[in-house]
Image 1 (tube, chains in turn red, orange, yellow, brown):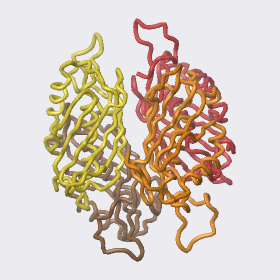
Image 2 (image 1 turned 30 degrees about the horizontal axis):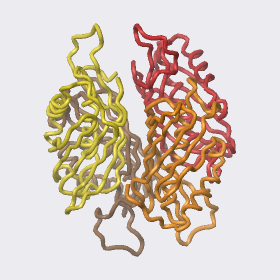
Image 3 (image 1 turned 45 degrees about the horizontal axis):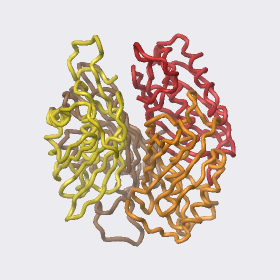
Image 4 (image 1 turned 90 degrees about the vertical axis):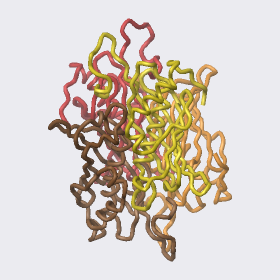
Length: 160
Length: 160
Length: 160
Length: 160
């Protein structure tokens, strides 16, 4: 991927702060490992609390990691006043989520004023071996304050 | 949707048992509300533990509910010896997941020997109003024991 | 689906005109059968020119019909000055596209100022029987002239 | 991507033959440019017959190229007796399909006995510049003759 030029010079602090305001990430034990403009790597230790009937991590939890990786990657390229929402994503599950640790790598494929397109991959680390277990393609949307608007609090706006 | 004829006369007990073997469902507080051949409704109370930066439930958690609704709906139409895996899904997020309670309704669009296709919708109940907040289309796969095989334990088979 | 109120009182003429400006629709033999606010039905006769190796209509051609049905359905709810672009779609192929005639039905699931979400279904008519052969979920984007902008001709703007 | 070992030593001739049996490819003017195990590149010259209302190539036609690239890439890794069907794909449209020539590159992400997962990218060549215009992720299915079956002609089997 091409290197991207962030519009927000404080992109790193802004992305970390947005990530840390998400209780779901804390509950799932997902942390930021690496962060650069348009690219992010998250990681999560295995927890039996989030497994499905065969002992693998639930596809929805893997999706939460992938989606968040996409969101943070997209957010690094947005202007400082933007909030971010996920529009849609597709997750493909290539192999069971069996492992001690899971890594979620996302990168921006195309940033835009309104929409940013990302791709992400999830890997399982199991007994010293790393396996690609899932992929995501997703569309993220920048929510920008409208000119001349509005005393509506952040995060209470409808999606469009 | 057309009514479906389950292959497994014990489909209800089998689907409930499969659902209850998933620790992730217990952790997320997701329960079965209604179950019939090829159709299922799940529900989840709001929990601050699973929210994102704006106080809405995280898209990955909504996806976990939608995916599980699809999985249970598909599973009701599979033969008794089948295990089930999600192949892929797409989630579209129509509105913020703001509410006190969330409902996930899935139905089978087309069952098949190997692949079953499902659609699901997530609704938020907020101050007495119900809003469609997300949709999913997904592909589920029946894992059938191979003839002449195999002492490999259930759930430890690779995806294909 | 709820009935939608079109913003453009001339929505019908505008949607038909947009459809008819598409040479691809003429080449593929796709026509409008029915049109109302947020809903459209298109149809196409079988043509051997657009088949794949087994004599079924190619998935890309079925997708062209589904995507166009979504586009017209979304367009009926956009303001008169909007142009429209497809952001993304997922097509699920449930059964082979075998038939003498194909029907593409789309409806808007959620309209928005910027993004509109649609669902569509493709049916094959074969020897007097109608079969659901494919589904689509898609995101469409309204391209609105920016205030104070721009002499750039319509349709030559980049996507975002 | 890892190099893949084809199961069918005659994979090249088989893939070319499958491609050439598709009238849709001839009608759209899509040709094979490059082919190796698990990877393929197709190309198409611009044709005004397949454009939409702004003179860009229709998203369904771009999808036909992407889907076929995925199909051929997956087919190179299937056993000689397999037929192939597309299960589902998602297309993301990053930029308008404006150009004199279009290139569709696909590669297998994970091959499997039943399901093969592919990714593809479409590029537009316009005035000497190459632009990424679309991406696809798709699931392809190998149709294998059932043991002890069947005089049903190839290509007339239902999807599952």
